[in-house]
Image (cartoon, rainbow, N blue to C red; front, side):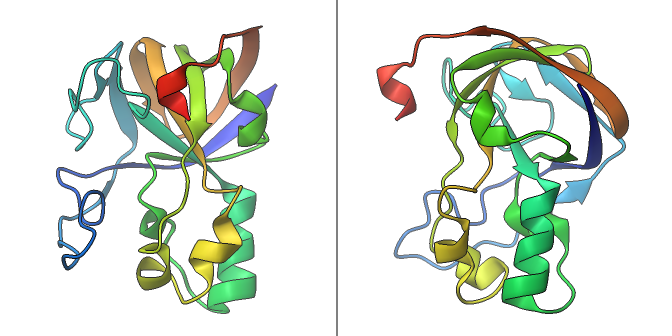
Length: 170
């Protein structure tokens, strides 16, 4: 199927992840034209690169349609897509349908690990009510099986196979 990669982001540090009980940090999130993805390691230059062995969130994907709903129904105004702190904002596929699937995306091969569950920080990053609104639609965490480069724009996505759910992906 054809999908569109609308935005690609990397960030060198964690603004919210692991910050419970502490204030948010202020690491920049940079929009880029392309990202270099390394099998088993993550995205070069991103905060989760080599985070830990076989990490379930080496790359994160977010649905453009969900972004639009948050912008229109919750924020009711301007909203930068980088507020969600996902690496790839894309259009054209139900990301929840890729959980426990092996698939290709623009030459990469990925396995969908689990939902990238929203946290309470979303209310600060976007607007109050975003955290609750995103439950079940927070995006997709995935492992990079075959690396390469993703480039903004249109690309192919093909589901290859089902994969066994892993206990560490819950």
